[in-house]
Length: 129
Image (cartoon, rainbow, N blue to C red):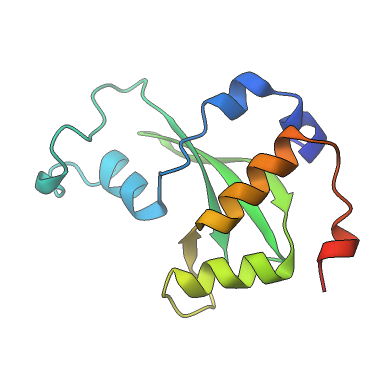
């Protein structure tokens, strides 16, 4: 698993992140062939296709996980600590009950991650409570 510093220094990998991918969309695209007929051309066309995206596991400490999804499965590439307030806001905004759910990241987390992963290291002890 990549550290935050390794992730920050891997610009080619970060450039591949699909900021609009959600856990639900990834499952539909990679695991449920034919179930998403309304998706149009938004499907996996080859076995070599992959998506990189961030998710929240609401049972974990305040962090987001970078996932690499292929037809073969999912691999956790990195975990990025985030402030508790942003973490809680994102899973609540997703509308699901906490306690074992995988959530999409919201706009505030996207902005936080973009800033954190492209700028100097952030002292999370200042922003977390």
